Length: 177
Image (cartoon, rainbow, N blue to C red; front, side, top):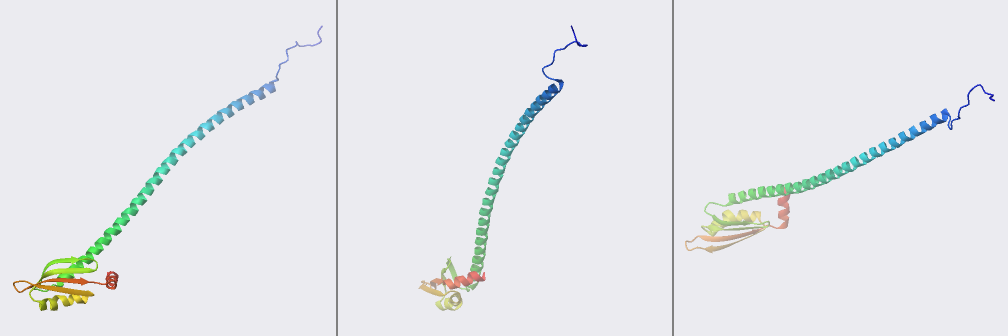
């Protein structure tokens, strides 16, 4: 006996709404997993690029430091070169002034110039000729000026003139230049 107008069917375990909901959750879970894998790969690539960029940055920083050191060394060398050039110019000017002081008749054999000392060796016809024309200007320049004469067989004199400058004069000379 049957009391129904329709034929009985087996009742499904899940309803259609439950199936839709479950499939949506499965698809969303799979998408979330793929998204997490994608983000993980992106993070790995960014970290890898970041490490490469950091290594490049460190290399550039070392290169900059090296260039700064080379610049310092170059500046020191330039300053030393300018100092030498200036000292040479002063020395050249001083030697030219010294040679302009040498009177006719006096022959110089050697000139030794140090920071505080000028040693001149040469030949002069007479002591008076040397003293009047050459020793007087030297005494006006140097604090101490001593000359020793040695007579030659021909009547002329070998002389050795040692002239010293004191520290205060050195300071004044460097301040003027």
